[in-house]
Length: 572
Image (cartoon, rainbow, N blue to C red):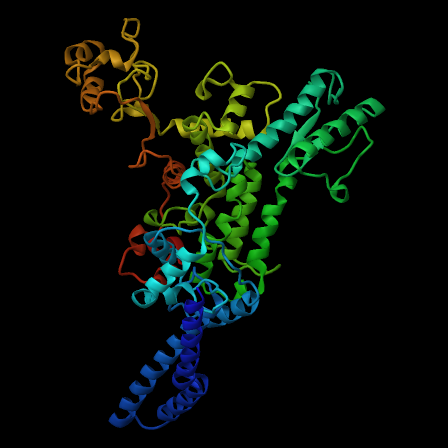
């Protein structure tokens, strides 16, 4: 490790000398070339002047590209496109990020994985203490590869990743394959909800009634806070404090008394879910109103919206269904930023949000609609609930809401249902549209009720005239000796169209079990991207819009933007 550090130190000194010799004074040269160009424009257009003009323009272009590349590397901004001429933006980004470098932990791996990790580094991300970014190691791998691998191997302990599942408790959900950080949020949410419900059932909490015929209300759980309702008695106050104490001890979370309030009034205003989510709006507003974002070109705004703004609420949208009104507010924030609104200044929106949120292939800008994206993200959580039933959070949810049935048959009218459970139920219908069984031996799939036939609508049999026969499972339709379908039986039981679709399903090798697949992805795994595209297409209205071929190559982005903002006039 010491020898590598010494070599890098010497190489860095050589690079500094080379940089001073080659690039020092480029700003002064740019100014001088601009003056010469103005002099040429003031003189007659003779052949010699034209040649000098072309030479100066080429030199200026080369210097501007070098300057832009320099500030891009200094700012570490990865989501802007080279050639976007956002040099001023890069300069401001550099000033703001100068003190944000960090050291990353590594673990011992073999040479191939070391090389893979090095080439996965962001080329222009913040460099380490040696001052070299990832791009240096990637471009000069043939020189430094051997030294780097030896240094890493000699420094770190043996690899633990293959034993992670055995060593790490099921309570740890982050950074482990097939586990998600949201899992424990769900469990913590349900644990607090159960403590309150049990206290209410045991009579320690009476709650309040909004009217004589309404059920007692004890709590309303939100993303990061809670409303508790109770009578003004010492017993209920003590019961409430006992619940909070138990939850704090178990979770390690503490109540922030400075952000907590208590009201003693019959007319205490209720709290909707929207105020509890305002932190998402504040984060988006902070990104759109900062100084450096105001320096962005239209193309820079587009990239910021897609890469940064749409990612801010993803964590919350993965476990909670946001109110429609709140999603509309988030859409408005993005639309205002896109059309150039600054602070309180108002800007004309030349195209509606429905049009800008369409896919680019359909004539839109491809901006995410937060309501549809929320449903697509929630369906991902439901997919994990179905495919990983033995995970801790899935066992908790099943035990609470459908102990004796499946997720598909779980009742939506169950009392004391939490916000998370309501959100999962909202995504259930979204998931149904692409969920089906992939046939192995057919023993786990009901022939008449489960979705399992890829080439027919909804993947299930609609004609149930023969469902009273002794044919129950798909396994009854397969000859397990020859691994072929029972053609005559299928022809007798199903309509011709359905029968043909069944015969086209390949028979899996013996011993294969039935699995769940997502029909709209070639891998069979649910993806938010494929589900979102499907929802957008489903919501799309058929009013005249800009032709979608405006985004096709070789039409450059600089021309496509003005074409889009010109609106419906292009179709007239």
